[in-house]
Length: 216
Image (cartoon, rainbow, N blue to C red):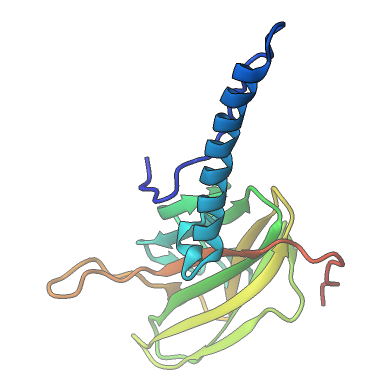
């Protein structure tokens, strides 16, 4: 169970009104309600006070891959896999390729994505990465990366907010015009603790706006 500095507040168990003299009942009722309101007020003041956000739980996750992910077919899009989970709350990885990050609750989410791209031949390679929501590519969400030379390694990373309905999922997709391209991972080798081929962190930002944005 996570450490909590604020106790969970439960509805008070109110006494049953007697059929006779209500004075003792009212005294007991007042004491129970006084305790309940004191607990509620104390908890609320902690949350809205200085640094009160540290008491809040928000959906979040961090997923990463420790394996190389080569391009299977040049010019054909494929998803980025995240076969390892470090943090998860209010979301999960679904799909046979460990690619679909599915949220439990509707809201606006922030995604921070990084991929490590490697070229294994001397030719110049054009790589594009982009965002897909519920299997539909998000317009104007692509990023272009150029690899030059054998063993050239470049990182592609960006940070974006996106609105998601409960049960919706995000995938990262990519494509290269050369098959000698991969998302590259490195195993731990002292003193370096290892390098993931791809990593993505997800944080809940806010509830959905009253008017949903129109996808580009």
